[in-house]
Amino acid sequence: MTVLSQQMIRELDASRVAHKREAARVWVVRIIFVLYWLLIFTGALRKWGLPQLQKPLFFISIPFTIWLYGISLMKNMWPRGFTLLNFAYLLAGAAVLLIPVQMIIGHYALRYGILAGYGWLNYFFYIPLTFIIAKEFKQDDVRRLLRHTLWIGIVSAPVVALQFISPPNSHINAGDAVSTADQFHQLSSALGHIRPAGFFSSSMGLGLLIATLTIAVLYGWITSAQNAVARRWVLVLATIALLSMLAFSGNRGAFAQSGLVFVATAIAGIISNRRQLAIRAGLWPLLVVGFLVVLWPIILPNAYDSFVTRWNQAAEVSTFAMGPFGRALYGLYGWIYYLNTPITGYLLGIATNAAARLSWVQMPMASYTWTGYGIWARESNWAAHLVELGLVLGFGYILFRIWFTLWLLVKVWKSTRKNHDPLALMLFSFAGEVIFMGSVTIQGTVNGYTWIFLGVTLAAAKFATAKRDDIGGPTRINE
Image 1 (tube, rainbow, N blue to C red):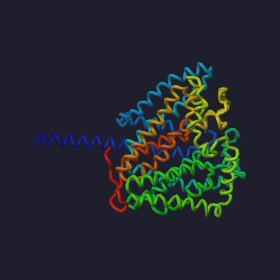
Image 2 (cartoon, rainbow, N blue to C red):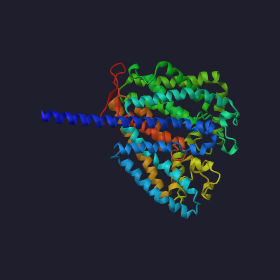
Image 3 (tube, helix red, strand yellow):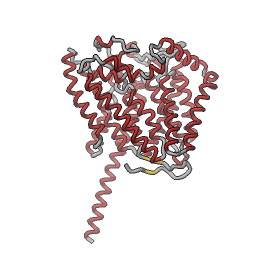
Image 4 (cartoon, rainbow, N blue to C red):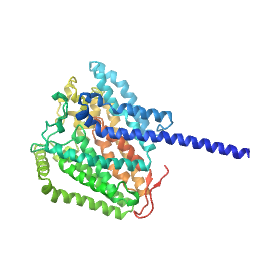
């Protein structure tokens, strides 16, 4: 009897511990979703909601991330045992020691410490977020994030269309700031149109949304009703939103990233022995190409003419051997122009977009060196690592990105073969490309998308659906 009562007490204690941990996990997931929504709509707040506070709003995600990290540490939920994460800690510590050295050597004023701190945040602060998402997200959380993405795409599409037809200095494009210096100036497309930004502060953010929306829409259509992400009418609206934003965006990168998603989905169908999935994934690119070739010039002729004109103009003035394709690969080889960078670099954060928007920031003379494109290191994030961290730590961070990409690819590939679910590989086609060669430490929105979707990709790799689309439901796979 005594033994039985002791066992009941242990089971009761274990139940209480499990309940408390699940309550903490729910809070962690809620904060992650807050960070995701802030990633999408902070640009809208900076442009239209609170333009007078646009600079402080730039850092609005930091207190929520600190809150998240605090819960993770207090509830013993902090990710451990990852060699890759430990290497990131090592780089982060070395960068802290590097900043004062750069400040002294470069004779920077104290206010440049703010810029260096921002640079450090972009490089290292959000890396643990990826592993927390991977550890704490359940399958329902992953699907819910995809569902949120569908709705974000639906509400973004009318804004994108309105921005395309509006003048560059209009309220919908430039924002509500009184000062011209605080207004947002979007990149031009052609024929007097700009590249819309949607709710973001730049068109780069919209390209990221389009890529992730492609994943959510495609995964919603190719999975069975039993594993559905959203109702069919929601998918129809999201599909229309996706196609319209592609047409209006003028964003060649968005087309390329969406194409990668299609390719990854087809590969996932093949390696997981789901031929029906591979066939469905093959039909979707035909649908998109059919829309672009047949319906785009008819339904949206102005958007079509603008995109084609911009493509032709970019090809004519491009300094790259392969035109736009050579431009797309510049991020991988632009660093060769910076091998004469000092071993300590110039200053952490000096190559960020934030530095470009601050009027008091003076770039080093090296910023005027020809880079093969004319926009300094910001067009190649690998080059920016050398500028901001120097040759040793810069190549260390490049190694970290390559290592992360390959490590993630191996995990996702094994998961797809074992779990018969294409989602992880679909997510990798976006997150893997961005961590490998995207502007992760240059542009804040890219930074947020990278670390959140790397985590979601790792989380998706933990789960499986039934091999046949018409049999069974989602099942949990033990790590």
